Amino acid sequence: MEYRQTFGVRTHRFADLATLLARASARKSGDELAGLAAHNDEERVAARMCLAEVPLTRFLDEALIPYEQDEVTRLIFDAHDAEAFASVNALTVGGLRDWLLAYETDSTALTRLAPGLTPEMVAAVTKLMRNQDLILVASKCRVITHFRSTIGLPGRLSIRLQPNHPSDDAHGIAASMLDGLLYGAGDAVIGINPSSDNLQNVISMLEMIDELRRRFDIPTQSCVLTHVTNSIAAMERGAPLDLVFQSIGGTEKTNRSFGIDIALLEEARAAALALGRGGDNVMYFETGQGSSLSAGAHHGLDQQTCEARAYGLARHFKPLLVNTVVGFIGPEYLYDGKQITRAGLEDHFCGKLLGLPMGCDVCYTNHAEADQDDMDNLLTLLAVAGCNYFMGVPGADDIMLNYQSTSFHDALYLRSLLGLKPAPEFEAWLERMQIMRGGRLLNVDTRHALLGMSNGGDA
Image (tube, rainbow, N blue to C red; front, top):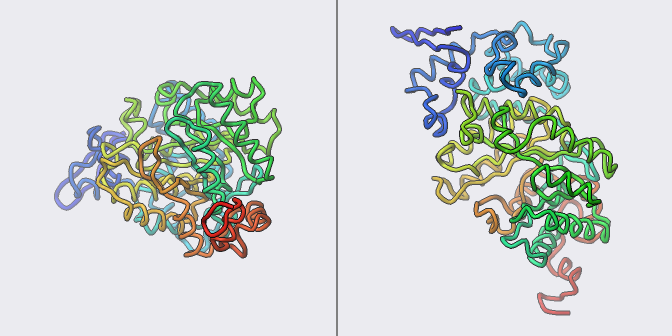
């Protein structure tokens, strides 16, 4: 179906809904690379005006990727909750934007609506919203998950402790874990990206984290961010695995490039649930705008719409954690700090609106036109928007993955600025260990005493 919009004396034509969505998108280098972006600002504005008039029901009639060709499309359509959708089924995309921003639309209403929205609807309304709109609506979304700690509660901010090491050295990883715990990080997960996917190496890391957790009775969960097949194999060998990790994308073809499909993810979730180590939230997913384009698997869709579809896949598995690694793929997809900031706010908004426990790896690669000031800005905006968790990397510099992220100190900044606390179970543990009191870290000497040190010297 062709879409048209007259703008002044010029009529802009968009061949189909996918083209309209792409032309309406905020400027991204990835969409320009793919030849999908608006040719100029006039066309972008015309596309947004046209998109605002599209009925939400159109997204139930016009699949962006044909149902018979893509299992993510089939999941999205088959899982759609018509009853939840009923409250907004008469609205256009523009009408949904107004409804989301209304004073009367609160967290309860948004939670009730989430199963009724398709990722494409959410992607569409995102394209009509300014950054402040994305922040305001996301701040009204509340998604709470639980394993040993409870993540996403009001007034709380959790941190993934990310103690990566370029050679997977156990001493280096242990030092980073200790550093993070003493700064109050780790309540979302202690999650290691291994430099090698050797199965025995993965199992050794899981055993190392679990030994630390059990020895000090730390109310957190562990994860080694290896391929899902490795996690299944580790569980078969009796490894103490809490969360199954996998990177996912918004199309079947993207996921095939990752070596996965829905059936494999379901197998992994069933295996993790059978271990009975926590509740129902046993999955951890990472995503990022540009992954489908990078894999040549975007089917002509813009990268933000593909990203929203990845969230449609993720919610099927009731994950404990989902985060966008927003600037990790590089400037070919998000060129500079402005584009990274926009994408981060879009991703968090889309995930939360679809009912996901969203976090964000606020990050950039060293060849992007971005710096740590850009990350400070995005970090602050996302915290105001109610992001569930961020990354805690020693010095904000991941020495294994070679990119720039956020540090333990950044978490302290946010908690101090916005009066946020760690997950309640983790906060109680920090107080019991004399690391934190009343939501604030105790002084350095007190924390050094836990290491058998005094005034920075050996005991």
